[in-house]
Image: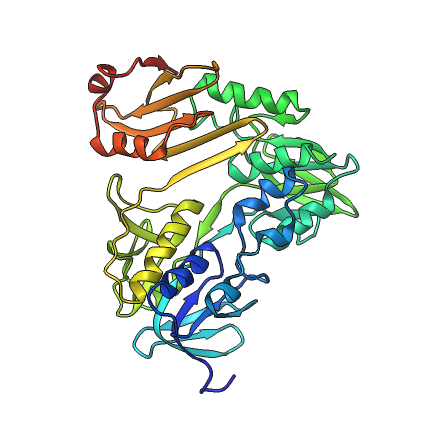
Length: 404
């Protein structure tokens, strides 16, 4: 690449949904400026939630349908399989692992998260789901009643376990607690959640801590802290993800415990550098400064960052929601959810399994809301959270029942 063609008006680091939406945001104002994306991924930007959701349960939805068509829609040049290793805000330049230099007028950091792993050898039989390439590996392992071990009851673990059991695969789900999502949901909901998995034929091993794995031919052996060993035809790790802020921090960008610090316009402490998605510490209008690793945050923050980069006076004032759906259960949540908080349920008219759970801190101030199998407008719930009512105030207008 020559010095003449490696300069872009807008350079987006990271090839996820935040970068895709940033390109859309830029094009809302600037139709001619050059845009490039540098991505460590092997695939152009795609709809990541589908990797553990729709691709497993909708026969008409294919892998090609996840492609966001970023290059075509917004006239973007995409550089794949390249990782940026150094950023120089003064020189307005970045360097990739193979020594390529790129220059920019304005830059976006949106490098997302990386899946956590446990000790064990590299193998196509063991996948920590994060990318489309990871999805392909899991898909290749599934079917024909092969036994796949899934570790983790968070988004990836619970959704992949549900997807696999619906695709002719035998599944063992390993969770560290007594029930799925028992750290976030009241007992009656985590029990309902878990029973659905059992009814579908998933083997659930509770109170288990996976320590390491070994691969012996076409068999994976998973070792637990209590000495038990479980064998399977494949292993999927859904034990969370980590964000890496080192690129920005090494370049001198301000950061805190949440990530790279941005203001309400998603601008970092360095001139001409914005950030979006998982890696940012942002001032949430309702919840205060925090981070978020959910798709709605990536999409919304990416769009606002792109518009801001192109010169619009815009503010990121969105409080993200997070969600999941498996089998016939769906839920949405806003704010902070912990089963250690005071929890009160509002039963909704109609089916008994519909409800809304409100979470309160020790002072009786609302901290989060869970919508369970309901179609309640999320902006309505955001408004409740924004008003910060006390438990006693909310009890005056809603029929609430204390739950454990």
